[in-house]
Length: 252
Image (cartoon, rainbow, N blue to C red; front, side, top):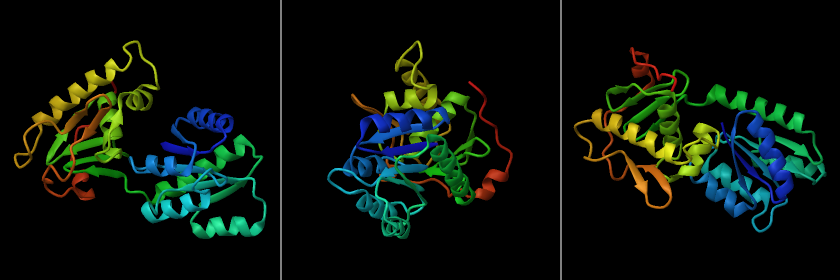
């Protein structure tokens, strides 16, 4: 899962980050409210761990804005503010859970798992961007009306790009999400797998799409999927279509 930790205390943020990474999550950190909202704009988040005592934009303001922009994103609030009315306010603003500082990391992990389980019951298992559709439960990929046969790593790279919905994903971020942050080849391995993906997407490209690769290189930054404004959507992809036989992504 992709988790955002919003905490201005660097030591505490790193403590939370390590704990969540041990749970298998990809974790990003924002030290203030504006940075948190900027990260939230880059793609879907599975969980936000939000401190209320932030510099600049207060945590309650961040919570209110997040709820307007992304109503379904789960939010776990952390704070040293003890009055009951403060907790009630956060819950009324849309927080999914609330923890007072100091807290137990084991309890925070358990509460995070509970929030994620609840959110998964209502989440659409199919990620879509343009003509690309990814069934995360079955690990199946479709581009227009074509089924894509991807390796495990190719699947993970494509999923990371689709989740960002046209925003740039850096090579370092892809390396962290797909390879756990380190390989002998460094970020060059990312370029190799993007090349593999481009070939397969080009081979399966619907006839009514623009020519060229669906994956763009952002010079000096990373990669992104071509914007929906620049590509005419292919046929609508519904859940029923995934009931048809399709090749599963192989392990890389």
